[in-house]
Length: 240
Image 1: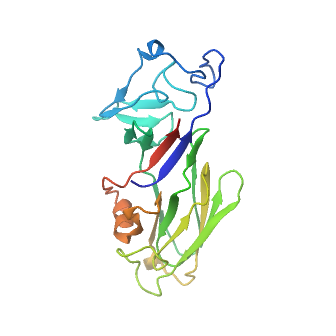
Image 2 (image 1 turned 120 degrees about the horizontal axis):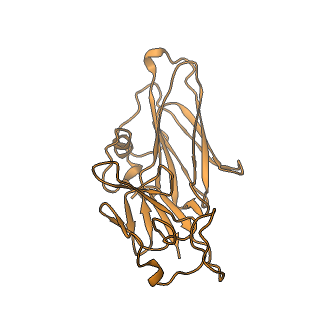
Image 3 (image 1 turned 90 degrees about the horizontal axis):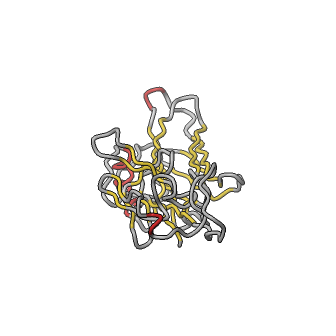
């Protein structure tokens, strides 16, 4: 698995169900009230608090099923975050998320950002930001507060970026998350001030648990080519 998000469910209120402008149920529904609800999209099954359509999901847990493709795709609400799997035991929602940046001569600063598509969704604290590329410094900030989360640096010593081995500062660096985050902004500053047009390079970044195999450079570059192995997933974790 790769990057895990945590979806923290607020305690249901004792008042009547509400699904107005804010959308979603605010009280614990009965089994009968959910009997009409869709429980799958393509080959993915799900259950309350997730749901599709009025009266079928808790506020902040809406799903959307896109039938415009040969194989239906499931998304979180109206966002572009695709759901690949849901673990019914822990209510984990897996979805791949990563960044590709192409550097160019004359540009030394690059930005990456990710914001939770809804309230209560956070990136769990046991995740790590991995950035693969040559000669840059990375600073990660918490979305909303601007507080520094951490920093790292990658150096290649005049050599091409490695495509295998550990992520240890040589062609790749990492920042461990100290707490759950509702989103982040990462600033990359190139330290190579002599790059020419022919030296344009790609920087790849993604978030995964620290213990994941993505600590190996080969896995990061597989993600860059959009060849995602089965364990390269990201999860939205819901705490009941």
